[in-house]
Length: 138
Image (tube, rainbow, N blue to C red; front, side, top):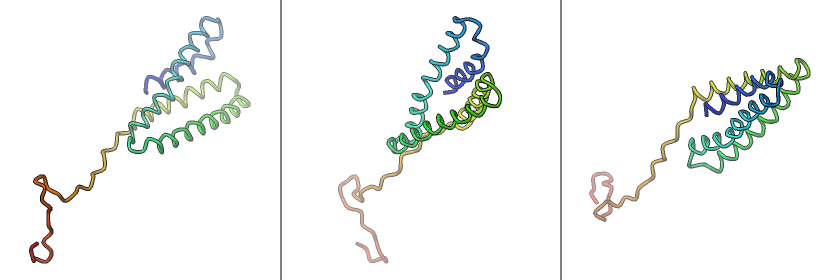
């Protein structure tokens, strides 16, 4: 995941400078495409591994957060481009992606341990365990 975010940040930072030739722009856009194309796949995998017992719930939450992030990024990008120009949008995107990289590296989720199952009170020998209530024996 760190490599994916680093690739997105690098491509975003280089894109304003890659407009001198078509070949340079193509190389930077290929870096962007490969890196950003891996974002959704790697984050989905990350979410599935973080809580394998709730794949559907965590997947739905992931879709919500991913789409909300796109909407928020578009809104923020519009504000930045209105106030500072199109080069500033890419630099802002690079800085936000670097912040995301730092968060991703420092707070990696750990898979949850499976919940203990309540076992049947039948022992391995096939006899039922009894409970001595009040010392009466069973």
